[in-house]
Image 1 (cartoon, helix red, strand yellow):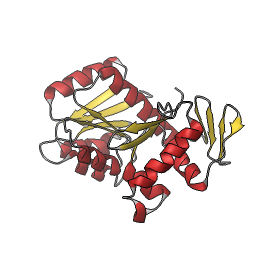
Image 2: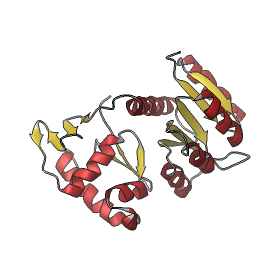
Image 3: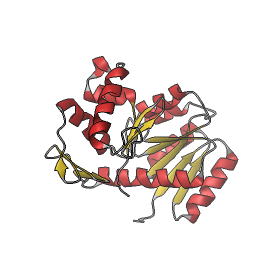
Image 4: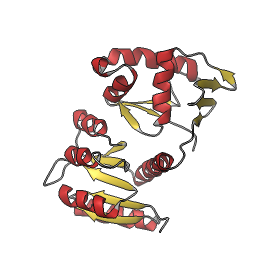
Length: 231
């Protein structure tokens, strides 16, 4: 069995497909392409790729629906591509289980970086995912529920720890406000974004060297948050 990561591209723009196929192939990825949602779904089943790059605007079905259909049976990482400025579409895709998104036009180096992060996270899900997450001076032990900064234990409240653990366990992924609130506070509080702002401010004060310029807990404007770990 080949160890070369297999990427499935689902996009209806021939220029995008050709460009990405050429670049990704040069970077030693195996690449399969589809220009329609139904074809992409069929290829996902038959080829079992390691990563899917999915456009939201497809001719036969919406990319959000494609994402939802994929998540009925697989946890293959999904990176969304979109020209849409409407954050609601991005949030919908992320809530359906997409791992990340990029807005067109995008930089190739940024896309490649997102691909590497998604593949690492996927490998962690398939194998024995590390229970200790390291980010700069932070060490988060997800088994013993301890957090250290520069070797000194950081005291967190129950909610603060639950919030940090969810972000850290999904490091590299964009987590929407809705998904974080649902996981940490429960479905009844999924719309209370004010809770999230307050606790995120508290976490950053305890963890970041400069809470106004965070290095670990990054804001995805209008969408949610992303936790960054060491490469």
